[in-house]
Image 1 (tube, rainbow, N blue to C red):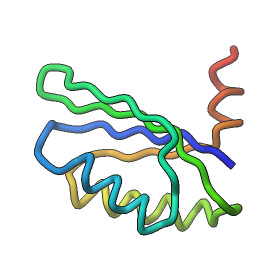
Image 2: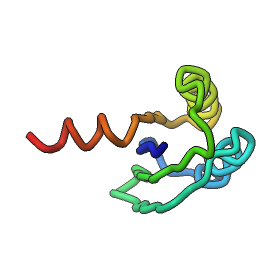
Image 3: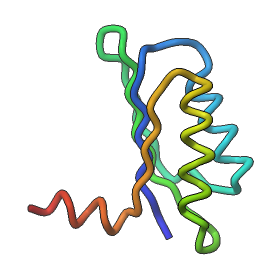
Length: 88
């Protein structure tokens, strides 16, 4: 299964490292990533791959905690739902 993760917030040191570390702890593979700084705002989008069907709510909760600690907003969505929403 694949998912799309987005991270948005004020830029500061350690955002990519913190998000990547949490994904590693959750055994989630980063397949693709793009990130940029827009003025003082950090934005990142990742394509993720799960080896097994995840407890998506647990993953979402863990990433929310990580986002809170880093001062950013982290959102995750199943790739199929993401694609369906953006076909309209």
